[in-house]
Length: 281
Image (cartoon, rainbow, N blue to C red; front, side, top):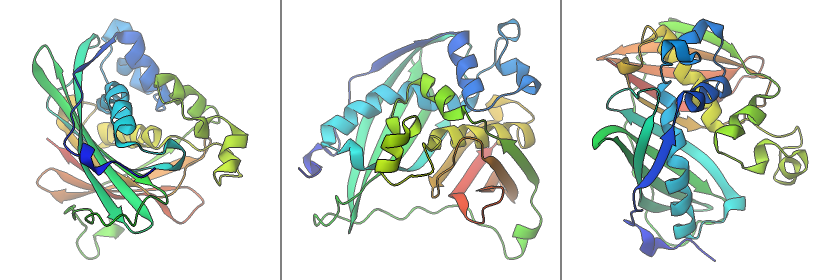
């Protein structure tokens, strides 16, 4: 059964998500937070909330949208993620998130589904997300091509002088820890399932876990650990990361509060994230 293009524009009912300090501390550990980041782990200091925690309240409405499009989950690949923040979160609260099917696009062999969410706390906007999802072998249905998005780019020669560089080691159990935040896809835990879908080396790390690591690098090196300064983070997922890999991220200040980001795995030449950028106040 193909994707149901008649669902474009569909919106979910608001989905409630209640959390406390343990929820945000678990998320921080799941994306590699260390004792250096005690403000994000210890209830005696709040704790503060990592901005990329924004993806967690979106899981349920995004899952509802998957079902609505009649998406084949076994062929799903997370292609890209964007979050825009309006204000930082308190250490506990109840969020309301509404999801929307923005578009279904034809990429010949692949189909692209674009979903969005908007989240509020006490009626005030907190953050908006966009999820770009690729469905293998679902293209060729005669639909429109995806719209082109303009992204910040480096000037000629600028790639030689990053504004900051960060190496972050993931742990062998990183995916097992991250799945406790709500993403239970067996691709990230079951070796037999991973091999069945083409990853003989074993379960891969969640793309959104890598996203969280990069968010932490930005928070430290571009935001002075102030969550209120991170305004947007957008990436395209290109290559898999395995638990235990060391991530290397370089950030380039291209002006007007924007950074171009390059993330790879130490010891492998290809970028794991592409078209990656951030806005910092």
